Length: 414
Image (cartoon, rainbow, N blue to C red; front, side):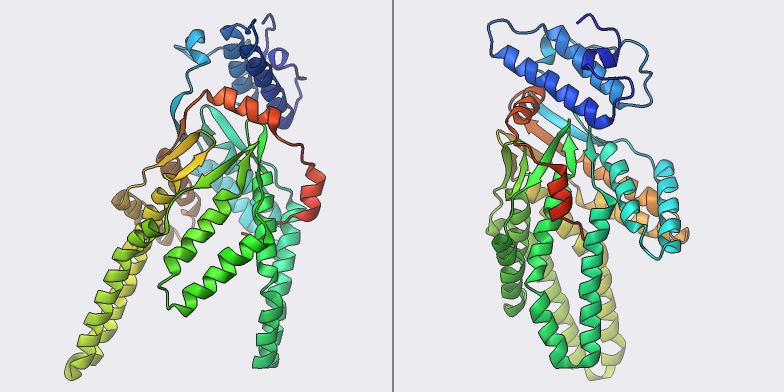
């Protein structure tokens, strides 16, 4: 390549948007993939220059007026085949920068009675996605505040209807729940579709193809079974939720697949369940001792609640996260999650203490610390070049209009 600036190499204008830069980069990767299949492959130096140009154009901290420089120690001959192996995630954001975003979001959300919270979420998600890095490339978020606000207004309307019905009579409240309950799977599908479509990596967006019937089965069907079984089927309910989300998630033409079994989930929940049973048995024995019942029984329940909050809940989160992601595949690629229980408990406990001591002001730093730890424990296991994989998915991905997504989907989460 004879071009001298990152914009010349990518073939975009100097004022190009990030989306235009992403598209140009993926078009370059597609040309690379096509050339590799031909009898006249493009020089490896061209791929090195393309990668360096994309990194320079996407990072505002790097001067864009100078020729892009490949990373130190880069061997162009190895670049094409390098990404075969383990690619760790990284989170590059810092608490001070996020604090400035968070405090403005909080203030404007309060003075607008919550209306600005939709715009606040876009700013927050854009920042967190931009600082989540995989193979030197960030993720991107494209959500529109109006679609988020629309979803929250729908959810708020449902809550108002339930509140009014509850004040009318128990019968009206029950009938309202029966009427609104079938709408829950519809909202869940729309929310997951919105989040997937508005998340991208290297210019290629994710997509979600879950159906209303699947959501109805996973969330309501298995949820009811978990309830009527007094929690015995809860691990199965938990597994079906995760499989519903991941098995219907696509990146380009490839779909995610979670192969974790119900038995594996039951093994994760077995220890907390056994501990809970043990505490209840001890509490029952203490309750049978008449003279000390009033003193020791409340203490036993307090200790149980503290143990559940600071040990059992983190234990379940760590074990289920590792179980799920170590069982997920994307085409010929897999994932690795290595969250550690006690470091995670120490991190969560420290965040809680510091947030309380600072009257909530430490919250942004707490979120950044969690995001960095989770990213550091995650990796993508690629069986082929990541650049070539993305290029192939970009070429095969169907075109989905942004207008259709904004019209049909919404986000109801905070």
